[in-house]
Image (cartoon, rainbow, N blue to C red; front, side, top):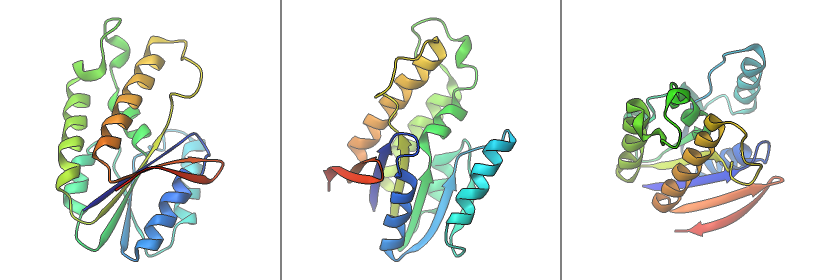
Length: 182
């Protein structure tokens, strides 16, 4: 079992780096995509990502039940790319705008269950797992409570995943910087 976390900002090259790592593994690859085509622009982005990947790679669309998908798909000699955890997190924060001020997302039952399932499942999986996530803590403080909640939960999740991961890489301007190596 090998878990790699690749972090970076928007358009930093993190997905491309994950794909390079998957190609280098020589394993069969499945991409677990968490984006939802809720508008035409996002649908075009999803199409572009699919077209850029090798045709032999499978793609599964999993906007929410990530741990269950990973348990089902992980196998020795297989590489899974999860792209991206930040969109998955956003999908789980439905209803968060109704939380009382200062409450973290753990009060959302679906969020808490899915996050906890992911964190407990990852160490048990066979094969190679490459997780892609945005580093959202380097920018401005969001001006809305929901934006701040999202940033805080993304930061917490990235820290928890970095502790579990064998390798953590930060990508900026297409250049990978290894932060943690097995």
